[in-house]
Structures are given as C-alpha cells and as structure tokens.
Image (cartoon, rainbow, N blue to C red):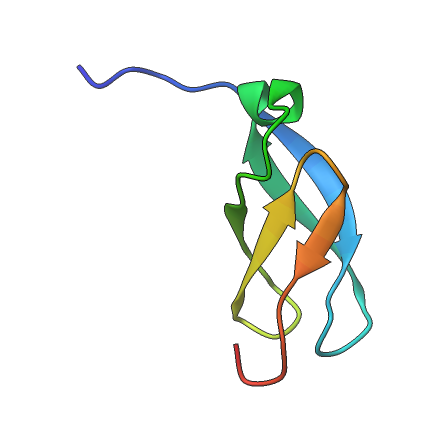
Length: 64
C-alpha cells in the first residue's frame, strides 16, 4: 500500500480570479525553510498555482 501523506487545508486568493479558494498542502510543507514551491490545484480557475511555505506567497499568472 502506498504511504499515506497527511494534508492540511490552506486558504488563498486565486491570482487569476481573485476568488478565495481552499487548497491542500502536505502537512510537512509548512516546516520547510527553503524557497521550495508546492503545486496547488485551483478550483476557481482550474489551473495550478505554486505556494511558497516560507513566505506564504501564491505564485501563478494569467493562463496558468
């Protein structure tokens, strides 16, 4: 059986629509100190955005 990963919900604003969206991150993503980006599926624009757990920034652009 595959390893189960714990996930935690986060709320973010979609950079394309401005809508508030709930996404899921691996629970250990918040403990990272590097600028590793984590992909998050966006229900508002059906795209993928990237979350930087160190800064809390959502990175994405029109057409992403």
